[in-house]
Length: 150
Image (cartoon, rainbow, N blue to C red):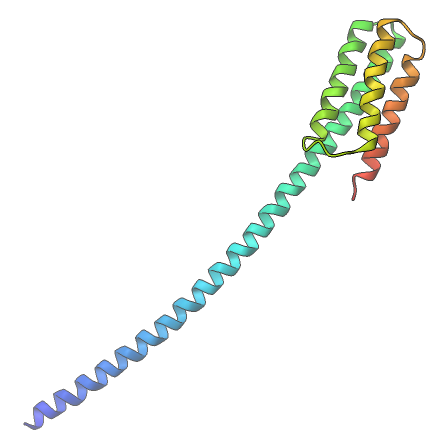
């Protein structure tokens, strides 16, 4: 009978120990779940920041490419390569469009786009004001580049 009592005591102690371990494991699991949730929130925030940074880099790249295309158009007009100038102006217009994919109201880009369209028409008519329009468009793009550090 004593043996049964000893076995019963050890069984109760064993069950108590297992319950305590189970409680500790549950607390540890809860802590780990909280840490995972925190890491997920942080990761989502960093992902959003990285995507925003990528959009800004792409925007800057398109603005600089538009600026470069305008410079090429000016050189082509001065060299009387009107076909290449037309192509360069169209490239600048396309890069301006790509720099503003959300179609936000950006006065500098709208001005540059209007001036480039005007320059296309002026170039077709061999208007000497074409270079002036291109230079104004270039200035508008530079203003936008300078202001894009917002």
